[in-house]
Length: 310
Picture 1: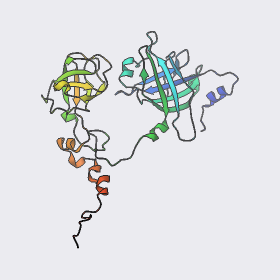
Picture 2: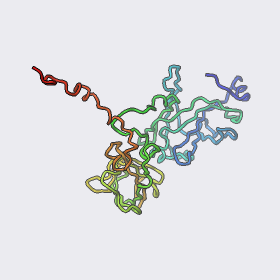
Picture 3: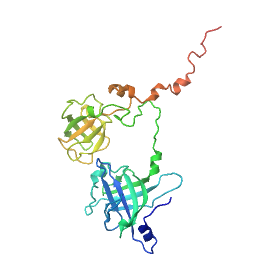
Picture 4: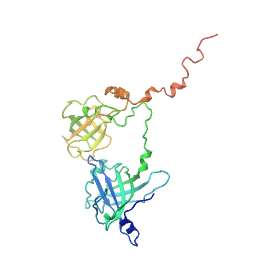
């Protein structure tokens, strides 16, 4: 694949000595779409014009493997390692953001430029998405930059199943008004970041039937977890309605009187669709298909006694 380079950057690449550095910009998955700038150079690199304008922070403690590319449509990728330290602060990048999942599948652009004159132009190397980040107790984290062909490995067509096939509960095809049945709740008792008890703080004044919020979500409205979302595994732990267990813990400690928006869930079954009054929008077409067992029974009325006879 050919690349178009600015004349000044091309002239620099043709010289006997080059002063190149690698830079990247990550779009964080928060409401504002905050951009994180970084570079492997030992000084900050500032680009003042163009789509890549920004100050790229040096010493971000990030190292990467070689970028693996191929011509057979397999996913291009490079492994990225790094760590958090107390001496180097990167704006808008915190341990809580990483733990909160704001960088999982976040869009990334990777390029190089002349650090002595970064406005002379930039050369795009790769665009893609971060994989899921993992980290250990010492602050070392690891992920990978996946190429755009990663999107081709995702299922993008509808399939027949007995479960509803809507992309998201409450979307344009589902048509259930989820915000209207979302309940604001206060924390009344805390076991851990993953398990705590809540009670309604406004209207409606009740949580609804047991199990209504299983696979639903909790969105932090106040406190240290404001803006973070977690999925609910169980809304009735130990037979205490309102004692919730999450699939993943919140990144920060949950405190008494913290407020969350508690949205109901849906298990994609016809029973749930009847509960929410949205049967005409049910997408589980598989319930209307007889299946293998029915086909093995053969035609109706067949068998050794069919038709009587002498």
